[in-house]
Length: 303
Image (cartoon, rainbow, N blue to C red; front, side, top):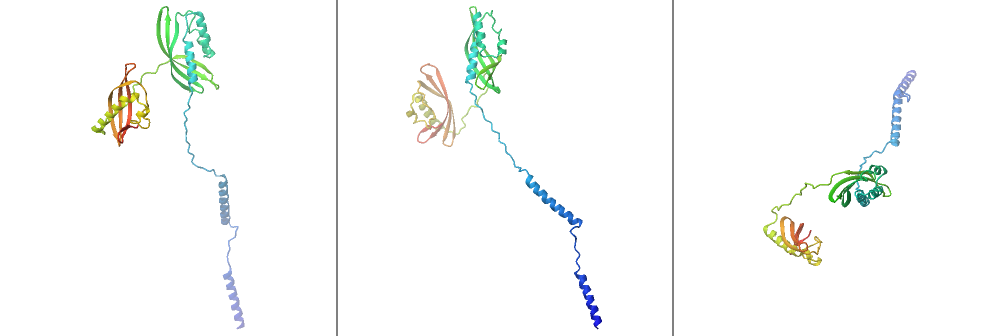
């Protein structure tokens, strides 16, 4: 009996020992090592990107174009003085030599040499300059400007004379202190001509009834009859916001020519030519107006 008990105890002990046995995974196994390497690599890469990342954002560029105002007074004066000296001569040796000396103050040395024979010693004509018109001054590049001008010349040969009008273009250079020199000789050019542009003419669109047309017409006839000689105080009864200035001229009102009426809300718009007789010159004067009228108690010109 005693022996049986001891054997049972031994079996029980052995059974407990088998149940308590736990298999563990070693930290040096390949899979675990690979996971650790991946984790550490990811962390290191994240830290690196945090320090080296470029802050990217959208940049909106706004182009600002500034119009530069060019003072052309000096260029125009320089050009006019040159034109007067360049196109003026007498058929005398002294006069021609004086011309050569004068134009040297405007031209580069190369152009002075080029112009030596423009007016010969034996030239049979004389020239004097009349009107000079500057048509345009435009920048070509840095400190260089193109000038287009016309000149009226009176050409005399023996006892005959003729008026000649010609147009030319020159190039000038202006240095940093404002000094000027012509770097391209007068070159034949074209003078601006009349444009074929025709503005669209307004038309009455039926928005103004006949009674209003009659009222406004009578108001305008009364106003323009005394307007030429009206004072500021007198104009205040007919005009708001200084819409029309006093002119203080001796003009005699004749009629309204082809008035056009349109209405929007409480405002009436009028396009009209006003025919006057100039008492001094005895010529007819047509003044054209675009007016905005409103009626409170009476009609008033507000614009």
